[in-house]
Amino acid sequence: MLGEFWPLIAVVIGVIILLMLIMWFKLNTFISLIITSMVTGILLGMPLDSIVETIEKGMGDTLGHIAIIFGLGSILGKLLSDGGGATRIADTLINVFGKKYVTWAMIIASFIIGISLFLEVAFVLLIPLVFTLAKRMQISNLKVGLPMATSIAVTHGFLPPHPGPVAISEAVNANIGHVLMYGFIIGIPLAIIVGGIFPKIAYRLTPDAFSREGNQAAVGEVKELDEDNSPSFGISILTALLPVILMLFATVVQLITGNEEGHAKGVEGFIYFIGTSVTAMLIAVLFAIYSMGIRRKQNMKQIMDTVTNAITPIAMLILIIGGGGTFKQILIDGGVGDTISEIFKGTEMSPLILAWLAAALLRTALGSTTVAAISSVGIVLPLLQSTDVNISLVVLAIGAGSIFCSHVNDAGFWMFKEYFGLTMKETFLTWTLLETMLSVVGLGLILVMNLII
Image (cartoon, rainbow, N blue to C red; front, side):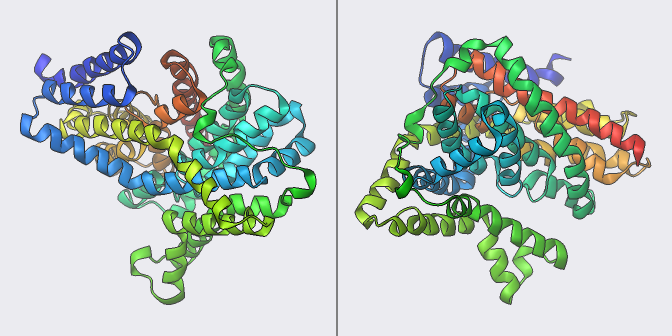
């Protein structure tokens, strides 16, 4: 009996070791993650000669996915900040919504931006705006940051073209257009309900977290500019949303034509090329160099100094995110996912609840939203062949489960912790609890939707 559940026990031991290294021994987070990955690999019975290879693969796969767009996103955010674009957007949002309704301003803006940006990219793009708004309105960074995190988490788990919903849709032969439509119907009220309520809950649970100044060095000092020397709202919002526009345009074209990115040629192929995350971010950075620099009569040395200042502070943050990837890969290669799959074999549970539960357990064990989503498909597929259930809702149920309980094996956990300067306990009571609440409330809305359609 113990042998069957040992991989799950090993995961629990690994998480405890990680927390002890960071909280008790005060060891650097990146070093702690590497040590924990090695120890967990040994506990899972992995061959010693393959543990280091797995760690290297986890680091490479994680940073290979986000390092370029993470760096470009940091540069874009810094150019917006130093060029006055973030300040202009902040001023406009303050004038339109006022201090009283800043929560709704961030929910709306973040949801729009998060539709076609991966969570990590949207996070990096919005952090300078969060700090700018909080500073100018003299309120807590978390009061602005939690509504932002709510929206981008919802779009990441529920809406194509994010990798999880797209991969699940393809695996179960769901219509992506229907998934997108139901995703909006469920995702918008989910963001409004949780985004509006959760900051108040979090403040009651951990008021000290709301007094943290955050890791301002990660985005650099926000420069205050004269009214006459700041860009217009139109050019500022265009600069901030340009990668969103490019990627969303490519997604719409793909939905209309039904062609896959790799198989399209000519004009359509070019549209897909500029709509990829890396290309879109690069184009946005080049445009920001013009709109936030050259257009404001800055010379190239000044602009490139801004670029350099954007990259230097995030070096440790990138290593920590990569360290989270090594722990995730150890769990995957160590067979934790296979153990969870065996638990659910032969069950007669409702496909929607099973889909959510399988993805939630995999997410908790493995850390990656996308990996949890894709891995849970194999558990749910046998049930789909013998039951009458809306496939699109199954996709969304898996998506809801895949954002459950983000913790130490998830890169998003460390990004939130480091940017907002929180302790481990505070991060659990804010970010982890937020994602869990989104997952559970999301499942509830899906079940209600299933009764209606």
